[in-house]
Every structure is written in structure tokens, then in C-alpha cells.
Length: 187
Image (cartoon, rainbow, N blue to C red; front, side):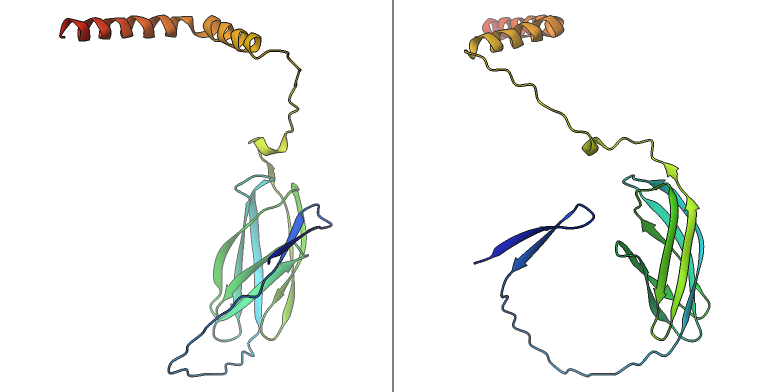
């Protein structure tokens, strides 16, 4: 049996934990193992961040990451909420990363972790405010009023519909009448 545990977190989100016992069957043919030890160091340079805060598109941050030799993968951690990988090459690899932020003033203290070193990476800029309105951020309360009968609200809705779209209904009735006359004429 699966059990689900929902736990609130400090950032007001919910963490769902599932307990399960999966059964895996793995078959391997002609396996060769190679040990690779990376001793290269890497450095990243932050160029700019642009975009919007609290919007679906997010902000785009650009970086160049370089190593002292070969290729490596670095990983950037900005607190507990933002993390992303960076590809690093000897010549320097330029890349853009999407970051989703809630505040206009960006002041992130990040750490770049590479195979043999760590580097502090600071991201400071101001983003633009999103002009798009998030439709999920509003709460609406339904006004429920008890009624004794279903007929009166239905008649009220029908009269409201008739008042707002009577010309559509008249046009539909005229077209239906013409089609009925054509069909009856050919029978």
C-alpha cells in the first residue's frame, strides 16, 4: 500500500512524500568501467540578468564559464531555492539560464561548485515588473443564496439571456424557418 504524507515547508509550499518499494531488474552486457578524476578548476563570470520578476517567462541570466584545462560541469547554488548547471570549457563557454524570481531587486549570493574548487558568484541587478496579471493570484468568493425553487432562477437566467442576445435568437429562428421551408418544399 502506498502512503502519502503532505508536509508544509517554510516557503509555504507542500512537500509530498511517497513510500514505495519498486522492483527493478537490470541486465548489463559488455560493461566497461572507467574512472575519471577531474582535477580542473573553473571560474564563472556573470554578465547580466534581464527579464521580469514574478512572471511566467522569468529572467534570463548570462554567464561565461571557463576551466584551466579540458571540459567540466559546474553547478551554481543560490541559497536553497535556485540551482542550475554551467558547462565550462578552456576557451570559456557562454550560456544563458532562465531563473524565476519573485522580487524586482536581484541580490543573490551564489556559489559555483566545480570538481576541485568553489567560487562565490554574486548576481545584482533590478528586473522589470511584469505587466501581465497572474490570473491564479486572485481569490473570488461565490455569492450563494438559498432558493426554494429551481424554476425561478432558471426563468431569470432565460430572461437575462433573451435581453442580452435577442437579435441572435431572432436571426437563428429566421434561418431555421427558411431551412424548414426548403426541406418541406422538397419532400
